[in-house]
Image (cartoon, rainbow, N blue to C red; front, side, top):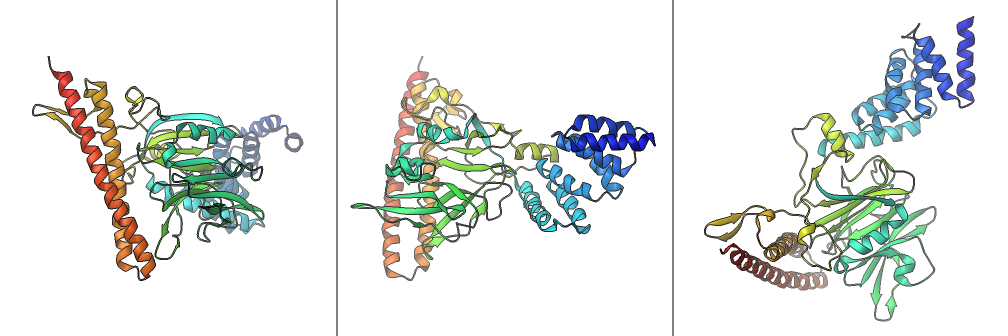
Length: 450
């Protein structure tokens, strides 16, 4: 009778939001009945409400073993946010076998856990230059300071169009300032729209693409310098949680964007991941997320973009999970001491050094080897041009492939002009790169003289 009264006390405490007192009651009873499924479930619920999910996990596990089927619903969520996605799928499946009334909601959660289970098998290995925590409303001002103006302009609709309309709508204007892609309210959600600059102003905006826009929110677009690759955030498509970052490319043969692809981890997470921006000229990128941050706060990671996707291999499960949530990562070399341009907005630049022959007897494999700061500046600029050259060669090859199969005469002519323009650009890039390397070699040899 006393035990029953204590259980009642626990229920009273729990229903009144006094979870610590309720937990004390249930843990006292568990000392006598450690295998009791119901008591384990109730103790776990107290810890869950106290936002101590990892402490709640073993209690939920014991409860589930004792046929407290509802425990699997909570275990699925705990595993999901602890990046144990395969276990989350198993827990949700066990819960769904119980045929609860909220099965449709749990099926959605189960599908997201399945997405996470696939994504965590291909986590990209990235090198981080820097990170900064800031209020979410300062994202735009951050990129105004750090983004190369030649790549384009980021701002709200009202700033770009100089109007009071759309003060919160995020938009991206191309480097040529000939087009803008921005988010605008469309019913209950936001879609991406595009508008082109004409001789007498901007034309009427139209939805970007049915392949891009969903019935959920799309936002935070950014277009690479090639003009065809777009990154954006979406709560639709196959989002892991909240906003995820997706990538698509414009297909000139269909005059539409290809179905978007999730860019994967560590860029995406069960939280909101807002935008991915890449400065190919400087070979530096940023992505913005609110994972593990206070409300209305984000963290911006500055990283070195990989020329090819590098997947984490031969790492244990805990390491991969930590890398997925950005608790572990490679630290890239800082180049703050070797700015290419003294007035550049970008204070840090990545170093991916290849062997640099200074003279017959001296070969460098690291920028720290340089004796001359001016020589190092020139060499870093050559590296940046090399990265851009690789990207433009890829774009050129893709456009040549499309030209080969394009049947529309007007589109073939347009592609031919683009191909000629790219070929001319590549010649200039190669010449500039060679000039910077030559100057770096001359300056460094002068510094090496006794």
